[in-house]
Length: 205
Image (cartoon, rainbow, N blue to C red; front, side, top):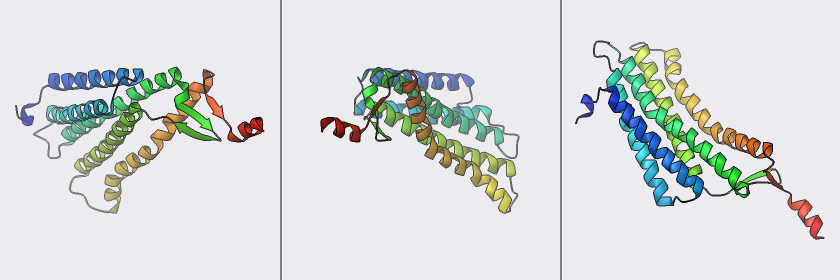
């Protein structure tokens, strides 16, 4: 079946359900520590492929052949692609928070520095949020191009690049915000492990 014929909302729903089932399986296995590096790669690739197909399907569903500038089609493609990736990243953050609450030793504050244990959930969060925000920035920029149309000028060019710049700024901040949230959860539950090397050396002396 050609992508051009994927103009049914049911296809979009099934693709979104496929992403949801895959990311929930990824999260459950990551939470229980039963996922390997190969498994994480397989789940990640499957989610990205389903998200790409979802973007194509939703774009075709919202495509308006009568309009000069395909604003709705561009919006559908952007939402269908970036939405599942960003939501997948947010779902994995919840699973990672639950895992750290269960195993608080995986996140330690030592001399005001945060030490984080290796986790395939973290790699999934990083990639999904990165590609989700990147595709959202590119898609929104393309949407602005469709809205602006043939107009030219520095101001219109700035409008086109602004969504991409905002997406890059969010990429540099989301990891910091995520760990601040998880540290807050651990501190509120009394599970945050804080170690001071100087105090340890004094105790030994």
